[in-house]
Length: 145
Image 1 (tube, rainbow, N blue to C red):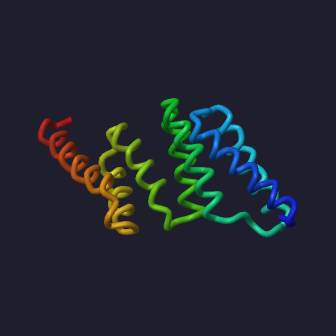
Image 2: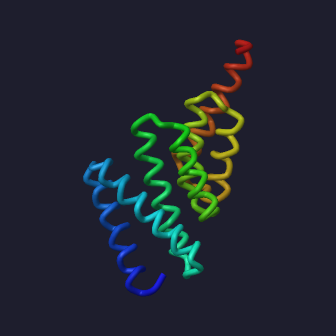
């Protein structure tokens, strides 16, 4: 991206973040999608890529919006994209793990929660989620589900 395109992209991302925090999820989702498309177009054109942190945040936050709508599989796609862009970003692993847990995919959820703790051992919600997932997996096995 040239300097002007980068400024415009950053402005789009900043506006998306503001809308997200205001609770305007539809507006935020549209802006995150526009930012992600802009980054993809720039990459296809051979331009310098966007900040991996910013792109991963856009995917993660768009995933959160989809999660709020209970579009779990679409949310997981966005979390996975965030992980692909920024593999050391623990939040999308945690978010994807929560969905996997809710869907009953305990082994996959355990993997994500363990990865979160590899990246950030002090992530308290992941510690609790890992413990709860192990308990629920054991209970499921005990009941032969």
